Image (tube, rainbow, N blue to C red; front, side, top):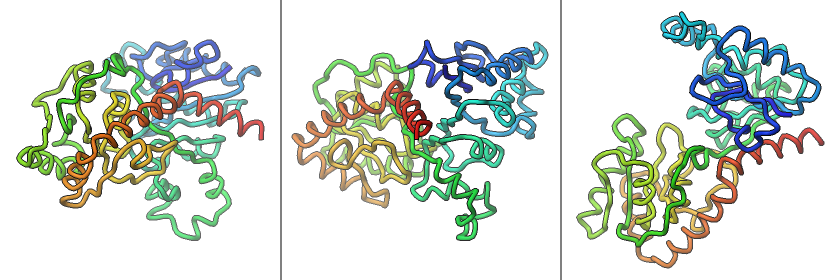
Length: 344
């Protein structure tokens, strides 16, 4: 049996008959919703069971006793109903003292660091799967475990080296709820498609958007909707484009990278800044561009000169994503990797 603690049943969706899911999100459909003191007791008991082979934990962003968490708890309408967010936040904290089985952490946060309040999990876990894992893994401790960039002395400490040995990259992949994906094949009516938040997102998006709009004046067919689209229409428009511009948002890894390929369009992404799990290879599964001024324009014009290559990349990338970057494929990767470490 597997215990999963977190906001959604990331592992439980793929291993439903083997997983006890303790939800820290009231909107989730759990085995047990961790909202009350008795539910914490149920989790405490389950963590001590002899038949549990693996514990999967999605870490809290902040500690339950932090000002941020306390503020959310006190001013929540659920507080007076006995279902405080503060109680849910204590689910992962039980692993400080409880848990007979190996622990693995699944970290899908946008931030490229591990917060100080979760270092106890890094001590306790066998593996830590991280979406935004810096190319230099030591940078996950920037201003958290270390006051600045980890120094050579920090990197030589045995405890810290054990921490780094546990880190593994994990893609965000296709969304868990992706109705209508992949869509039916569409005729290619646009050269490049883009739809995402810009004003409150990354500077990479803001800089590139002006270039994208300017390409329309150079004969490039650019599809930029004026407002959000229903998911099915978003996927249809992706499928109708040769390229989908997919610049990073709050994190480098983005659903759109994988959604575009599932729609048989080629994602055009700014150069990666993270370590990646079974990555989208340049020229094979995706295209990349330099984020400096003019880099996006040059990449689009060069790509459109070879439509046959774009078709080949889209088809190979779609096969790669559907094989390795679906929620089920990623859940199996986490569980099978953890089991292999347990057997070693």
